[in-house]
Length: 326
Image 1 (cartoon, rainbow, N blue to C red):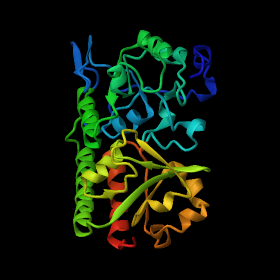
Image 2 (image 1 turned 180 degrees about the vertical axis):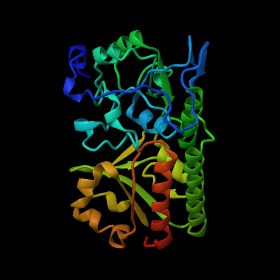
Image 3 (image 1 turned 60 degrees about the vertical axis):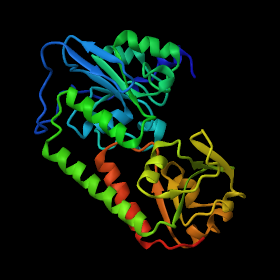
């Protein structure tokens, strides 16, 4: 982790024009409510403010999720933003130009954060800190941030649909209308796509799937300790697990030994697109790859119904056309 001095000096070139967190026109949401505001996170932590937070700063994943409910953060930080991640892959449909970037990657400009005078900071967290800090900050940075505003943690280690629910509950508490037409349409599209994939999985129960990410020297296979892989299993997709008893989110397998992981469908991680564009000969020899039975996945994808519906529909097409090749 870089020093706090480095964290405080995120170049101002990254700072964009900001806007308030009030809901977008037509979303059915209201502005800040008068009177005390409380919210209890999935970690069991209750945050109490004098009134509903008006100015919020969020990590990129939360920006994507809350944007779909009409919530407009004033600031954003984290992975997948601007130069740090190339394309803004983790912010979904959120408009980066309307928010002030206060940190890239694991860095945070506490000075830029304080200048926004936020009422609340929101982001992914884990049980390791009981949700009290963003997952990728060290203790020093976390202390600096919470001196500026309270931190509200989203448990990203929870099952996929529980993460959806966490964001829905928070959006409602922030003033969003969960019955707004756009919200209902997105949710319906998602449910239909999920049902379609479940039906294909039932029709082809013998198909096995390898969820893989690639690097120059080795590959990483997603285990059921990743919420997205576990989610696929819940929908009926049978994923290949090198070690069923593994407790880590990834299993490391050399390219040479990848052929031992017998799979009828391969899902290529979006972050490894360059690797798979010019793949290792062993990878090209895999039965699923030779048959063109390839889909995509991304465990850092935004937790939005819109994104998941599109992804699930793409998998439906892959599995409908897939055959047993192992």
